[in-house]
Length: 301
Ligand code: SF4
Image (cartoon, rainbow, N blue to C red; front, side, top):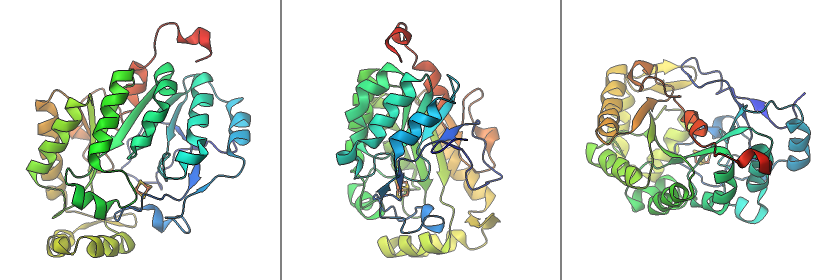
């Protein structure tokens, strides 16, 4: 039985199209404190990140059962580079162990701290999806107060690209009245493309009472647009989605820009997978297949 690696289950979302994978969360909770974050509905004391007990020992035990080539995503219910990682280095050690064991690893983060592990990432079958939700540093500081500013994240993308690590962009979530203008979308995608990103994953904000309250407090100027956008929304699981026609309109803005820039595109949990570029994994995990370098196997990677 696995002890810290877990089968990926995105809260049983009927709209998830991710390929089968395991997931590893080195931390419980996350210090980035994003106003729109969903984990507050599931994780106690969600914005107080704490390391998983005996993480490395338990991971070593799990790795003995791992088949080479297994996809592991880090992380999906806390950022693997949440602030304590700078001191504790648990994500860095876990990455090294997983990649040496032949796993494919997809890192999803909004922290530029990921560049610390660029060498480790470049030696295995790894890829990094960096999340950027707004080009506006003031909006970002209110929306994601514990995370590095967007400019640092684009620099991190460029550094990883230069080190040979495949990177993609998560423009996720798009929030009406906050970051849904075509100009913002264009600026984010162009910066990401210049930094080497080849794939874009996007989705719209799915409202829950707790995250909506935090959003309204963080961005009161968007209150009217937010309230009217979700009036008449669609219930999926415990979330209120934007009406489908609005989701299609927003995803089409991102898709068109991505294709114009020569990037592949996918939606996440929207029920719109017909909009995805054929042949790509919606979460960007196909990028890990491009990462294998000749000769690395002999070195234990
Ligand atoms: S980085 Fe992700 S897990 Fe962390 S607070 Fe933000 S949305 Fe939540």
